[in-house]
Length: 183
Image (cartoon, rainbow, N blue to C red; front, side, top):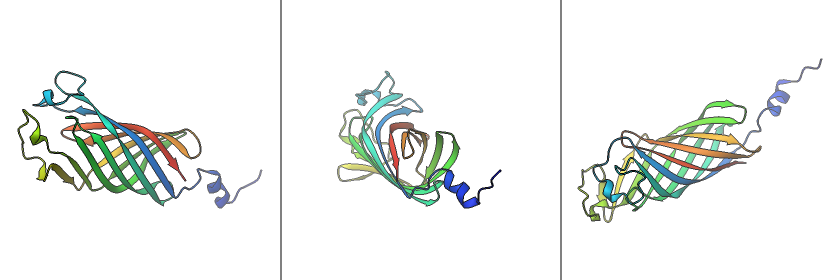
């Protein structure tokens, strides 16, 4: 029986990557309470606007700082929001591994996030509740604590199928799906 040195054992585990790029289609939004304005959601999947399709995408870059377990992620999303208005978010934060078994991995992340959308006050029937701030033709909201949960299924040594859940609690939960490439 041969005993391998610790360095060789670690080398046989998952390779250590320095970076990752994520590209995802975004999304599906599930509203956690009934919208007072479902009629302004042209892509709603039900009459009350609980489920809405949002067409867009997310790109992200991870820089791993502790093995494959902790990274700093910068992420940019552009999409048509529930009212089919141009919207987006900009996020930077820490992403950490919560769970890994075989090809399955769950990560969680948190950090500051800026969410913005083309001003809904131009939409007939919308009454501004003051939740978003306004600047020019845009509304925005800054969160110190924005984040996401991400499920990755390893397709190959470097490539993963990646599904994102973005909890915008207490209003909405959004989903995206795409790929992550580690290098």
